[in-house]
Length: 337
Image 1: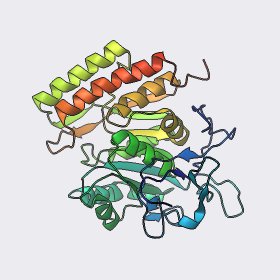
Image 2: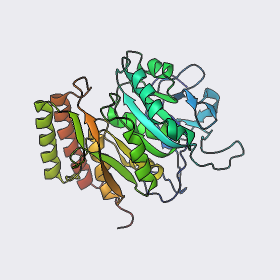
Image 3: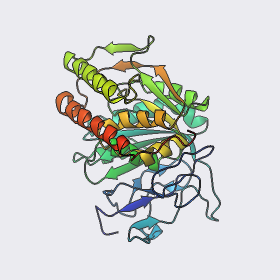
């Protein structure tokens, strides 16, 4: 490894059941390379490169050791040790039942409480099939990753520079080992016990399950500010004009996916910031996935990392980019028609 900025390919993540074609050579069905190219700015650590923490699948440390890396045919660093295979090279299923990804940027002050709350909420799942908490430090400079380790996060992924929520979630999806993969916000605006409800809905057959703040049974413990409400209405209007899943609550910060859906969407998604939420739900509809919506209880926190005006403007621009990419044929289509 040459240091931060080196190009790392994360180990293969093995799915089960049906899969959807991905752009390029990243295929889930075994035709061509099924390794995922990781984000380009993963920070090397002593004795490892990509992951830190304890891997709940029994494989020891979550690090990828330097001696497991080799130069690929394109000069990129590749990992030839696969968390989805045993030492004899036999394919294994996912290591745990449920993975929860927490993208975090400058969250050292509260990531410990977040991880502790998730451990408590997922205790039953840990005892019945296994669960892991994957914290992705999105280029923080305040010790967020160290705080996550101190709180016993199962896996910690560090991005060398701030890339945005979209890239952080994709990195977490590649690192996760669960049969079902979810993500939630570091501020826990959605009570973590609700994640179990999403898990169970995926296990009942859904490909994607999302919270819907507009559901008749949803509850807002605290009302959003007038500025955030106005911004949400503006974003919804733009989504309607651009035909990007206009009927869905794309910006609800709690979502869960089957393993196959998570990997397919991670391979097709390109948006790095908050627009990734719009993109993956639009892609889910485009690919014909079974998307279900559940009511949620939400606490609208003033301390959220969302900057309503600047992030809202970037979101609008990114939604225009999504539509432009779609018109240019740069997204996969539903293979079933």
